[in-house]
Length: 365
Ligand SMILES: Nc1ncnc2c1ncn2[C@@H]1O[C@H](COP(=O)(O)OP(=O)(O)OP(=O)(O)O)[C@@H](O)[C@H]1O
Ligand SMILES: [Mg+2]
Image 1 (cartoon, rainbow, N blue to C red):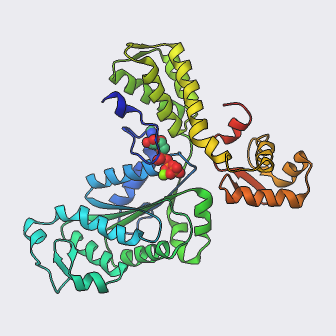
Image 2 (cartoon, helix red, strand yellow):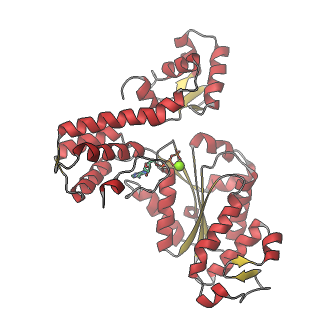
Image 3 (cartoon, rainbow, N blue to C red):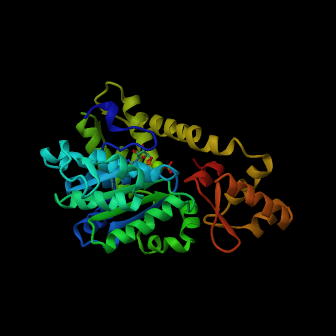
């Protein structure tokens, strides 16, 4: 393990080790090992920004590879179905016997020209569903399953619906297939209202919250020891507690611990202090500042008034605190939802969508 690989404060990468998601992974693997149509084979990961949705999907892919699955990953959108097909073709070919990879052994029967490449005619005429079914069939003959990952699921677009119905049909055909999707809770709830997506309602929902602090402590202990850095347990615990279990902050704090430790073999309380401060600043600059920048003074005052609440805020109370009319509060509410900073919670309530923004606004971060 090198210093640069141990902690990477970024978004959308696979961490050198996934901390504290053992249960989610165990359930997913149970699904893959279970029969076609097992609820664990359709998984929907929900979590706020930086909570580790993409990291978990990437981990699913790595684990699935060890269990005989080919994975294709796409970001929700116009081109995702084509990307999924391509991903299976690219990843699946190596699992075919050599002869089949090169020759058109199955031309005419399945529509493949060589390996998992479709003949030009099949490519042109077959639907997504037909292509996926053929790929599953061909790979299934060699004992290989198919896992489809779709990240950043947002609105109920036609491709998502098509994926949902296709998945159900393939399950009906007995194909060895699984899907895992990820998205922001507020964005996905709009998808779930769609009738066509009842299958998502039945899917296993994985709600990604903060990581357990003891798991973060254990990870820091192991990673830092591996790098030859001595840290007292109390300091490790302090560093871990400062992450609040937020995966992005886990990476930041780890990164700065190493940065400030430099060549010193010991990480003391001063270094931890510096690392925690620098991480909070970096979090503010990377996440909070860009979220607040486009907002008007009135919008920010609304957020500030919300921050006084521990959990979801009642709009009526926020309006009262600000001394504005219910109408005006509703307008601000709509604008802030549009900016993706808050989301509807219960009836007449809203909540922050950005982890720890409330703490930041309260000056507690
Ligand atoms: N369980 C974990 N253990 C250690 N690091 C993690 C874990 N989950 C995520 N990370 C790291 O935290 C950062 C944010 O994770 P990720 O990009 O997966 O979040 P996300 O939920 O997909 O965010 P977004 O909503 O912006 O897409 C990345 O650097 C990632 O490597
Ligand atoms: Mg992501």
